[in-house]
Image: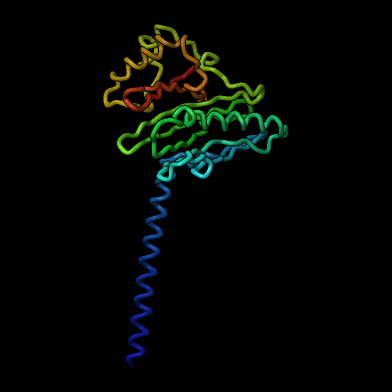
Length: 244
């Protein structure tokens, strides 16, 4: 009888554990689904009748360790898009080289900074047979502070050229007064109050002719997104509006 009771206890315990495990798995599955919906994981892949896109990744093993620095503990995670199944393989390689360089560009700019973590993800904002527009969002941090940053690249898949903001939108001194609050929405804000954006947007407009505008915009359907860095405030502002 003792053996029977023991066997029954083991079976009951197993069934309870199995149910608990199933409930936990179901909960974890729902949590993972929520996480996926809140990240760019579903935005890594695309397919057209002309080419397809999948993610590439750079990690710590791809970053050279400085000489004589045993205490080097930096973390590097950079995801970037790569084209495949294009009929012209040489053209595919050239475009992929451009996308790779765009992904590592900001890392190269920050090479001399004493950071501990550098992470970048991407979102495919527009993909069709003629144009690919990608938004990169990242964060660099040390032991005390974390800085968010954003940059983008838009490529004409026919000419292989990186397009500029001026190819889609004319920005003049009147942009802030005439278009900011009527034609563009703030889709990501570095401040609690929308009005706090104004000085940075005005600086962007005033210095417009002095800067290159290859990496500060993206295309999203019939909308255009503008990336405005907030420098000393550790972040950026994303504005989005119609350009047609």
